Image (cartoon, rainbow, N blue to C red; front, side, top):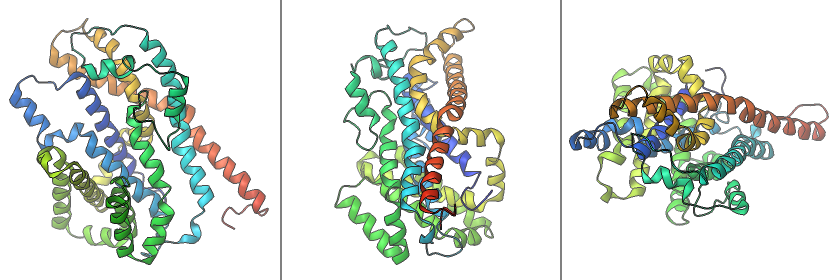
Length: 381
C-alpha cells in the first residue's frame, strides 16, 4: 500500500477483470477453442468459465470502484471524514478520469468505423461470428449518432462504436452518488442498506448500485475485517471459496433464478474475493507482480480499446498466423494471445497519450479553482 488513497495490488485485480472482458468478447467473436460439446459445456457452465466471465468481471469493477473511491474518507474509524470531501473537485475528477478518455476513444472509433463500414470482412480460417462482423458494418451512423454516443451520462438505446460503454455510463452516475452514500454511512449501516434497496427495487436504479455500496461498506469496515481475517487462515480460505462460488454463479446456477439475483450473487462474490485479497499477504505479493500491475494501470484504456482491436486488427493477426498453421486450436490460442498483446500495447500508448493527460488536466483545473478561492494555496483550506 503506497498510501491510504491507493492500494497498489488492487490495480492487478482491475487488470485481470478487464482481461476477462476481453477474453469474453474474443470467445463471442470466435467461439471456444474446442468443438466437442462436452468440452464446451465444461468451459461454459462450470467455474472454469471464470477466465472469460465478463459479466462477473463487471460486478467486480463496481464493487472495487465503490471501495477505492470511499476508502480515503474512512481513516481509522467507521465514520467518514466528510471534511475531506469536496463535491466540485470530486465531480471534476470523475469527469476527467472517465469521460474525457472515453470521448477520445469515441472519436478514434468513429474514424475506424468509417473505414471499416465501407470495407468487406477479411475471411479467416477461424470463422468469425455474425456478432463481431455486424457490430459496426450493420449499423449506419451519422455524425449526430456518434455525438449522442459521446454523451456518457445518457447513452442512446443502441451503442455501436463502444458497446461496452453501458457499464461506464452506470459507473459515472453511481460514482457521483458517493456523497449520498457517505452521508448515509455516517447515519449508520441500516440507512445505507434501506436506501439502496429502495432505490433499486422501487425507483428502478441499476442493481449495480448495490455492488457500488458493497464496496463502500467494505471500505467502512476495512480495518476491522482485515485485522480479523489476517489472523485466521481457515476463515480466510472459507471467504475465498464462498467468494468464488458466488462470483461464478452466473454460469453455474440456472437462469430461472433471475438475472438480477445472479448479478447480486456475483457482486457479493466479488466483495468476498476483495476481502480475501485485502487480508492475504501472499496473494498481495503475487498481485504485486510488475506485469499484472501494468495491466491494471492501463486497464481502463484496454477496456475502451479492445472492441476496436477485435474488429480492425484481430482478423489480420489471424490471417498472418495462417502462414504458420491452419490448426484451429493453435489459431484460436494464437489469435487470443496476440489480441491481448496488441490491446495491452495500444492501451499503454493511450494511457500516456490521453488518459494520464486527462487526469492531470482535471487536477490543474482544480488547482487553479481552489487557488483563486483560497490564495494561501491550501486546497482543503
